Amino acid sequence: ILLMVGLTGFLATIGQLGQARDGLLSTGVVVLGLAVLTGPWWVRMAADLRAERRERIRSQERAEVAAHVHDSVLQTLALIRKAADDPREVTRLARTQERELRGWLYTPAAPDGSSGSQEPALAGALEHLAGEVEEAHGVTVETVVVGDCPTSLHLLAVVAATREALVNAARHSGVANVSLYAEITADRVEVFVRDRGKGFDPAVVPDDRFGVTQSIVGRMERHGGNAVVRSSPGGGTEVQVELRRA
Image (cartoon, rainbow, N blue to C red; front, side, top):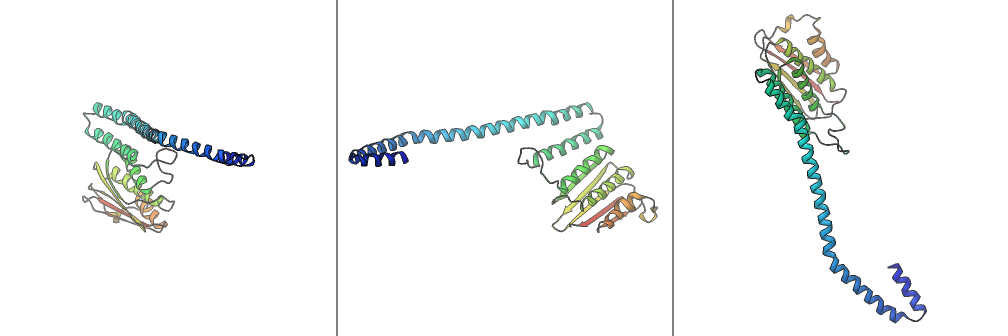
């Protein structure tokens, strides 16, 4: 446009503005015609580029899924086949793979494309903890977590107390199944760890048994929370942990 304006001014100074006007009009018609003729081609090319990009992304996603299935699911199935005569080991392997697969599917990707969020979540910490106890003690921890929030130093007390409750149940209950239920709301976190094992009498627990008195009850009190242990001989055990969010 600047070139055409400059050319017009130059021609005007030498008295050829009328001829220039006709030339510019012809040039404009040619440019407009080219735009009309090539416009659909440019539109198609842009659409093709977008489609190619979408297909490339889908192809990368399919390759990622295939690699993950090979590296985790298929290998776990091979281990399950080898342990077919051990139902407890089969259950442990299946639950471990289920946790890993759920985490991989439902953990949002970071902006750089890596898996996982920048700030750890309390729900994920509790589920990971349940998996660690299953791995270490060979029990099944049925885990249900409702709600979620970021994990702060304040809330790590809940995770630590829950860990102790799960480990105690795995070691002393005499049963292979433990349940973990957590509810996370806008103002508080509440966790229940239950088993249907042999139980005990909380009134006769010695003060030097740090697992209950300090690692669970004492820890929650030090952080401004509350912990209640309900149990009876032969009646199983329930540990309730509650803490307000800071």
